[in-house]
Image 1: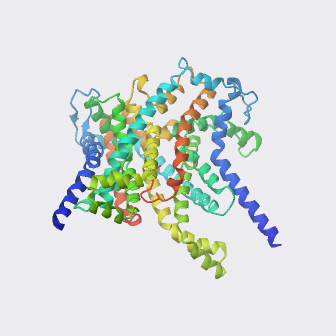
Image 2: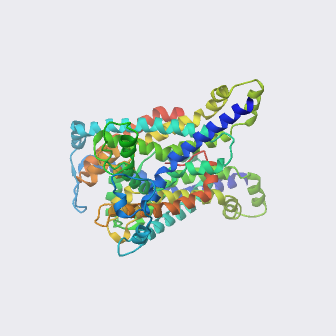
Image 3: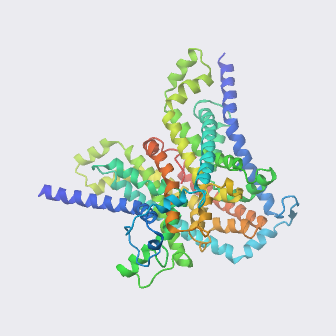
Length: 289
Length: 280
């Protein structure tokens, strides 16, 4: 009796997970392998024309292509600065709004706005604020506060727009870090702080010896996941400026502006391998699999 | 002395909070003020925060189908996001229950696989998915977007719901099984009603992802009448109908439904749903 019910349970288990797995197989697993195949081909623009097998041709041109390496470098700069920025500010905001004060709940929701609002809405107001001629940012920084000696072309110069997308991303995503860290902070047992207070611990010591060790794991996971997600960031960067060739944008342009699908596949396969290595080495240590 | 010191500390705290909040919402305030400015004022070389003259013209223009098909884009975005969220929740509830409660060989591998996809990005698969969608005759259809969004949000759906289901006491289910309900009935008579807040959160989260996507919508959709808001807006940005005030009015109107939906479930988001988490 017990045995059959266990078998029935397993059958139901497979049955219930089957639709999810089928969808993942069709939209993730199959395309992954198809992508590898495409990367060895010169893929024709016309969907009815067959692709031509060219072996490692795409990879060869990729390695020899300076703009590919440039995009990797830009991506690393972008990903590292944004991850550090969003983590530090998110942690700061979580510590701040974990203090007892009036209206705390409202403040916590308000802080989430940059993360919640659609990227498309945010992108246009940022473009407007950072407009070199009539934007408020240059006006305040240069003409009113004299912090900068000259106006910066935030939208259309290589360094200006890299800073623009970095500041935007930190602003857009620190609320996510804030939300995750705060949730963890709220689950810390209050009695630990009370015991520390009795022992005469200062707020700094409480932060250092109780709060930080408790949230260590969440912060580490956030850093790793955010790095991977930002490494592949596409939409907000592409929409803000065409001058920041991170790998996401570089791949998109290769595929849909120059229509070199085979080369684009080779790029994504290479990046996939890179991130796989990262996942296996680092993620396994941080996120206990 | 102690009270003055306490007062100073409170003051610093509130100043810091005010600064942080200001940083978070300043662009939104700017969006509103620009949407209310007449055209000439938006490109003034001495930008001001407050509008000198307030006008509703930009909102009227954006909602006027002769100027900009805002409602059509809105409807498309709504249809796609709603269908995605609905299917995602139904498929995800089944899968999450399977992960949370049923024991079978391979479950651990499946779970790790799903976690792995969580780290994935759409950019990695744009070329093969584009080729597949074209080959399947789904190019320039809303269905293609719904399918892709469901799968991209699947890990979050499965993890958020699975973690929630595990918090429901198993004894409840055992009692129901003894009373003669089968597992399916347990799911929709006990688990689903008890998990409604979590299911609503997941629904809205998936809705958000679908509503916000630019990447796939820009590749899969070409005809004007099927475009979603992000694509429609970026097109408006490149046309002769482009006016900053209109852009801002349209941006606000695009953000409002999402912000309202999110505020309804916000407490569940930052509350017990940390593990498995959401993606940004």
